[in-house]
Amino acid sequence: MISFYVADMEKAVILMKNRSRKRLARIAAALLVLNIAGCGVLKDNSKEVIIRVNGRSITAGEYGDALKSLVPTARGHEADELVELKKELVTEMVEEELLLEEAQAAGITVSPEELSSEVDMIRQEYGESPFRAVIEERYGSMEGWEDKIRRKLLVRKAIERITASVQVTEKAMREYYRDNRDEFTRPEQVRARMIVVSTEEQASAIREKLTPEGFAAVAKEVSLSPEGKDGGDLGYFGRGDMPGEFEEAVFGLKPGEISPVAKTDYGYHIFLLEDRRKGGTVSYAEVRPRIMEKIRGEKAATALDAWMAEKKRTSSIEIKEELL
View 1 (cartoon, rainbow, N blue to C red):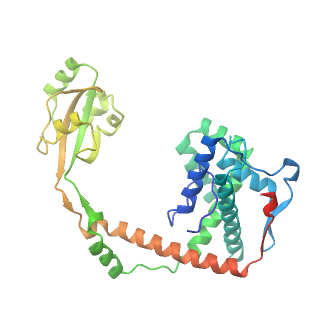
View 2 (tube, rainbow, N blue to C red; view 1 turned 120 degrees about the vertical axis):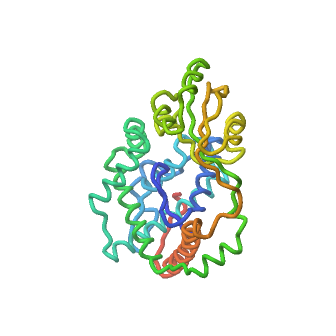
């Protein structure tokens, strides 16, 4: 599977699940446990070019920073795991340069608005304080990190260009649905709302006046659970997805019925059953978008693999392995 290096705080390319990236993560996790060395490149060689791809250069410092972000606190001696990680990282960096070259040749650019949108989305997910601290530790500055984001967006656009011709036929989707029915079965599910308070007296007083129509409003006002802000909505769930006390209280209800007060380790609960879905095979219409995404992702990955193999065959790639 073709892949490219991105920091763990960045989102992966939309088009496919990156198996190689997962391998890097597993290796890096093992190295952290083993306290194995992060990089053999000396600081005074940081500006030396150690990888050259069709004239595009990667320095020892850039390679070392990428490896450090995967294994930030490792120290000690070399190991087979580290050798494998280095090889995979070099492969990813070479592939990224080839994709950036494609983006440049195609005149692909990233607008300030696109960059700002991506940065804001990631910042919102992590919160300002821890976000900035981690970014500055790993990249030295926000500007350095934003440059990484810009490169990632260029690579994403290049991949979208390379795989733009991939098509998924209705016949292929229906055949997949027919041949993989086990993927499209689900157990009986219910959708419920919940109110949880700290005392039995409060729960009993609420239950006495509670109506199905007013349940969500009361949950927003008094419920202690995180779902309270959404009117206590627990969404759909099947047996085994929730604590046993929840299931015991909910699965015996009829749609529109409110449960008695139920005591758990979390407090005193009241449930409203909103809907019940029978178990069985999910209809083709319901899963069609998921099947299309899966098949297109697989076909896009195959197309990208083929493009990358041909690109590597016709490119000039030099690697100073003694400095890795």
